[in-house]
Amino acid sequence: MGNKVLMKGNEAIAEAAIRAGCRHYFGYPITPQTEVAAYMAKRMPKIGGVFLQAESEIAAINMVYGVAGTGRRVMTSSSSPGVSLKQEGISYIAGSDLPCLIVDVQRGGPGLGGIQPSQSDYFQATKGGGHGDYHLIVLAPSSVQEMADLTALAFELAEKYRMPAMLLADGTIGQMMEPVELAEPQEPKFEEKPWAVTGTKCKREHHIVNSLYLAPDELEKKNFERYERYHTIEQTEARYESFMMDDAEYCVVAFGIAARVSKNAVVAARKKGIKVGLIRPITLWPFPKAALEKAAAQVKGFLSVELSMGQMIEDVRLATHDARKVELCCRTGGMIMSPDEVLAAIEKLTGGEK
Amino acid sequence: MTTQILIAGFGGQGILFAGKFLANKGLMEGRQLSWLPSYGPEMRGGTANCSVVLSDEPVGSPIVNNPDVLIAMNLPSLDKYEDAVVPGGTIFVDSTLIERKVGRTDVKVFYVPATKLAQQNELGNLANMVMVGKVIRECAPVAQEGLEDAVRSVVSAKHANMFDINLKAIQIGLELN
Image 1 (cartoon, chains in turn blue, cyan):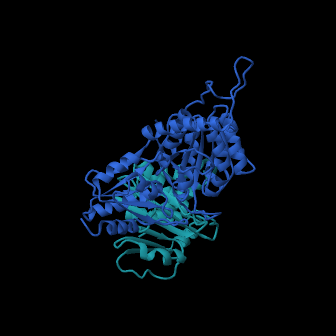
Image 2: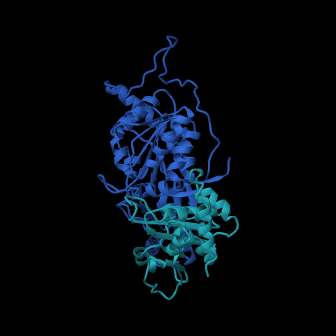
Image 3: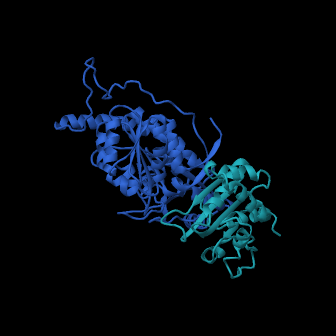
């Protein structure tokens, strides 16, 4: 591991992807993630990689689909409206059981929305987004270090389970600079995958990349198989950070930038004698259900802190079986709550109870 | 110790650069830190601001809502952020560009004619770095040792000629009573 360098979150994604052996990037510019594309445009030609600014987001995701079929590490990045455009391609990639990385540096929505930070693509990222029965692995960085680390992890998990992974960041984490320690560069691996379409050289059977199954029994079987894999992922890959939870009587749940703001509020509440902790989901799908279920046995109530009108809160309620009250502290449209706002919501939840 | 710094002014005044310098200096000192720019359709003449948090502990929120140190490089910035400064905090005012005085009595205030000093010393628009020097002198969010290396780390090789004047601007601020 090298020394710490100061980087923007968006740049850390790009550098970490290159170091993880990604040599194919397809994208289309959109604030607040354009630095990812700009970094790739500068670096890829120097290391024998491919940077291509496509004519649209739809074209870019289909280029990703193409490279993913060959088994090489490939990615695209965009922000909310652009990721909506990609949904058809994402569904096809999921339906073809191919690995790739899609980065969404979220901005306010719906529609063209605004350009300030948001977390309102939570439903789209974790519940499907495109059509059909499928999931993405969804990772939610809350620091520049995690922008780098989770990019590498996303590639690994995508390959391990043959499915697309999404890095669900937001404009703040994308634009901010923090010290980051980058992993040692890894050369791209060219080993033959048992499913990749790389040319048979007349020496083996064809591999077929496809998401069209006209026989319903065959399609059902495919979906059943995929959901068996999803089940394994839910059992083994859920990740979260637990902060001041040991003796907590109340629990804040937040990810990404909202978790950073919430941490300040939790520290401030502790100074006032309120026994509150924080669970920060790092994987949004799979959602860390077991951790929340366990917390529900310990605490009297939950506070979901989100930059949306309340999307993750549904998963908090499901995971805790509505056994405890779950309240919402939210801002939307590009606004971010202050630690004082979260603290006030904690005090309301606890009813002044110490 | 944690210092939350908010630098605000017009686009083109080097607001983000001043923050970047402090962040790099913090990195060299092995501090924990974050740097967050306002981003969007800002351009020269529009408003720009930048949050810098320097700490000995992991940084929580990178968004500075209530600064310990406010550097106001134009009047709209002072109007907008004066009330947000924590009691006992410090406000640095570019008195060349801001004629009014700070109304609050529970903060320390330094009126620095930074833009005028930069012009008099033929430092172009480096009022930002004069201000940074004064902030280091009065609040010491970063150490005075090793400033040269920190300047080198933010001035790209392409603009090597900017090294001397950036350092000089900081020194003018450092020596300002």
